[in-house]
Length: 139
Length: 139
Length: 139
Length: 139
Image 1 (tube, each protein chain N blue to C red):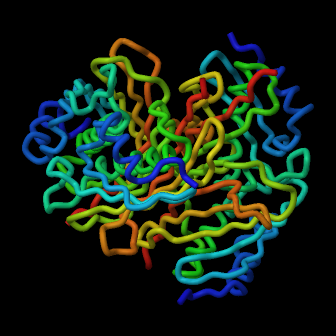
Image 2: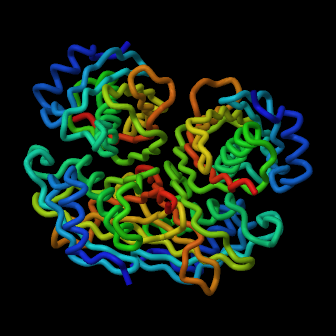
């Protein structure tokens, strides 16, 4: 069972990680392996036509893996991204983006996962991300 | 429905793509979106201890995406890999490696998919690959 | 010789690509193969301690490749990123980030380059990016 | 200064890493940051037309980073690849492939580098690789 619930994660973000507030993330569910997060893009993330920018999708995927990792290991603010690789697959529709993350490997020092991003209501991913976080040693 | 069956794919490989024969690939199933392939590594792919080498896993993943793509578009020998990114997650067990591939986007000129590799009998992936093929224009 | 100078690129961005204005990019130089860009991060890109966030570095690298591509092919607003892979290597120092981009392949439909990011005054990269853009066909 | 010379590396490979003998690698030079290796592909690495296969290029790049890392830290057989990302840029010419590797970061537990691959005599890379090795802790 994860050690942090969606509500605990959202509170942690508010308190410790205010830089991602602008993503307007909502954490729908999280378990031992999977997470679902959604983002309502604000104006600064939009491209002409109202679609979400590539950098906003990268930031959402990065945050999604961070939340999924924190849910497993607790509020370790110092976990850092070491690698992130994104493929942009389709132009997103205007509106909410759903991120579904999955842990591929949770090791002692590295955690790897993949995240698929969807426009709400579609099953075809708009982007796919694989990312690895480095976990600081316990003191 | 895919345009090539596992048997047709295996015959095509024998006829046109003999370079991958050494992987001893068997195609278990393929549909519009997913494929399952297995490889019995030969000696040249083994590391001390009998586990499969990293390069053999890269080659298996690359071939798996190629087969999955051919199953959708027919025997286009000239599709070529443009990008392949692999994360090695766990040491494989000796023995057969199972590759499960999935199409993320099948476009007119590019096709992207991901492939998870498993030691037979385990649900924890030993490696995860994302790869993109370029599809030649129809003449 | 590139078809757009740094001044032309900066004007194009102001007119057509205002979303990246917030990066406060300055284009120092560009030629057939290389570009140098710097970013003065604004508050929203900073982490506690005054260092630049990962997503801001991804956005800078993405923009750098875009500028480098435009300099070669002219103001084609519709070129889009298909793949971006970043390795975070060192914690950046507070202050300006320098991006040095290089074209690896400029094809008819795809352009690939790599970008190294540095804290001003240091020769050790803080991050390294490889990215591919898709170039729309000429009408 | 590196702790292993090209001759020491070649001997180490013969003794401890015979799986890569089939690449027919020759190590031309190595210093604190850079390495140059060449491969004369054997028949099993060739595609119709005599060009080197994608998997052989991946294997060469992986081995090149391994040699570059060993040259810095000494003969640590257990360093393992955690991530490798390759872009295939041009069709190689028949004949020898040159790999030029560079360290981007040599940390205590992770080492990241990039490798450009060339057909002998050309300055346009046929492929570009970024890869990370995990370094086992000292006993």
